[in-house]
Length: 484
Image 1 (tube, rainbow, N blue to C red):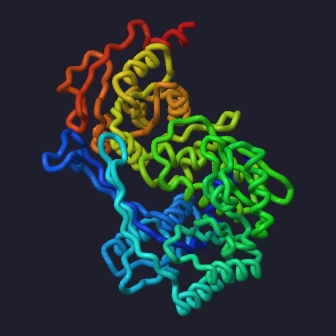
Image 2 (image 1 turned 30 degrees about the vertical axis):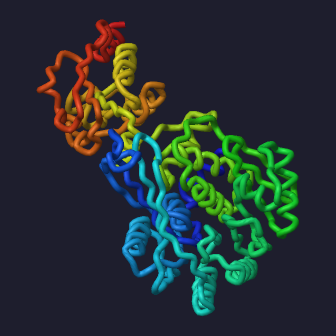
Image 3 (image 1 turned 90 degrees about the horizontal axis):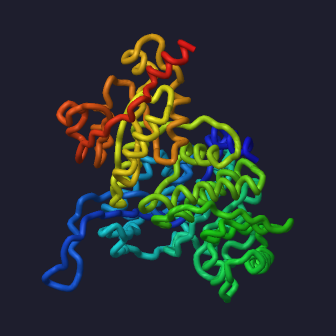
């Protein structure tokens, strides 16, 4: 199972062409600080600090697939309005093919606005207008889809958010067309009546959606989920039913029986869009024909990454590959973050109101002094990110005989420490350029530096100087080894 997942994530996923048809949306997050109550009404005043937009609904599923490396083709409706322009821009940035998008006149693009403050979501504002595709639109969609199928499309996703795009007529025609080409159709369902999804390869409800479909509350235990899933699978002639079950993970029910895969224990910050993440991974892995237990494990890993982020988040292929590798009981190389990934991660930590600490060094031969120093640095905030000198940088600073250990091994050792959240490599003599991107809350330096001597100090909220542990140094260890 492990090697199947590695091979799939490293290469094969980039060849899985997937079409996403559904309700495309824009998600907007407005983040601020709450320090007082309004004098006009008993409501908190949110002092806005930042705003960002991301693809939502079916567009988030498409964006997740694109982030995973799949060629993605999107079909949905958008209005000739500001939110429609934002949606187009976001999808273009994600690398999504928009040849199937329909510009609907006199239609407001669906948008969800979330107000965050005091480290939590305070309010959500929705702009939505339910609209069904016309007969002309359906003809266009089916022609567009058949062309893709003839060009090697591997999977179709129907992402139904109940905004009108997925009608019974369109859904039935898509499923019938896909069967002619032997291509699976996966459905993210909406509502209690799933008749319009009849004959699909798979449906991916959560436990509440499954309960609504069968008309009774389903307890979150294996036997009850299996029984309800079997009823639904047989009623709607499904090949598979994938039930997401929060902390219980995912269950797949098929003609051959049921497979359960539990989630890993972790902190959950925001479940927005996590179902779209599961759908994206399930679709891509199904397109490649991976074994079902591998599909479920991959989906679980991706969902775990998604819920640990703030707001709607597209899980990247490199993140999933890293999580998959760490989850196996084998020795695999740790991949340090790129500067872009580190900047994004630090930004998300800060959005959650968490304090970010940064320190840097060569950390050539990791010893007790290093670990004590890093533990002290980590204790100053919520997250510690370590800037690691590249091999070339260490050579310039320490001489031709250094480093003893390559940067990939040094980063692996650092990342294995419980106190270190992430590692990012820089090639300059100092991390000043990196700090200009990350802007940590606290910059930590070890030794007898004065604050005004610390490179990049202007990009940090504050600078802390920590003393090194006496009697421990890499140079001293090297001399001792050579003498002995």
